[in-house]
Image (tube, rainbow, N blue to C red; front, side):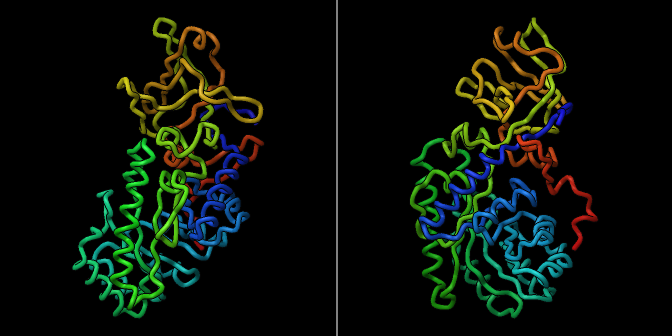
Length: 372
């Protein structure tokens, strides 16, 4: 297929290898893998997980849950604080799948208890250090009150505790990531001990790609929910979660201008395609993408002496060494590895595999196709 505009390429074999590796790690550690589908948001990519025996998934919105329910997934966790303004849709989903919700406060639990028409699994989101949202792990008074409130409702089935260690994304040291993981597991196990007499089947669920990729022995939890690992990206490579060879997506962007006096090439590919995520280098410079050479079956590793140094809405500015600057001409396609594959995929709204197959993305579908 001829590429004429910014296009997100997907290497199926790399993605399948990433899936297989995580599935095997979960089996080896005897934990359930409930992968987060917010990274790919594609029914076709979801089937690659199903082929490896995955049966339960995580999503980040009611809309996403409905989309995957419509494609046959019947055990779905929405790992985002339940939005009580969507109770009608939540009831529709709960009528046909095993739905898991997450709550962080008594107001949400009360609204769910009052309006739910079908039973749902409900977990409490615990903050073990990320400081985004969740109940502090040591705030036993609040947890006690919420657990008791849930226990009194017939439509709410207390499932356990979930954690997302997003602060691992700020680390580049394996020991630091291991420490974050150990701290979270310790706090979760204290919670399990506190409530296991009343809830012997209480589940502990944790999910972040750095921990699940880097740590060899995953202990003390029942479930892991990584998502980005299916594609990986430059952020994960810098953290140490993957190698450049594991990154399964690459942008193909047309070269539209050259400025020899500055050694800069201009791409048709800006923040509306990549997002504004950036990697800060040790010399304080900013990198918005690493340039690779596109090949017949994929792409090379990153080239030295050339990188994306700034993005505006539609433009990408690439700084290149004289040798690499001369290599490209107007109308060429340049390959760029994204800093954050989740946001890039969300913005691009679809994929072109290296085998030439078009794959869908939830954001590229009209709303009417998402109604059951």
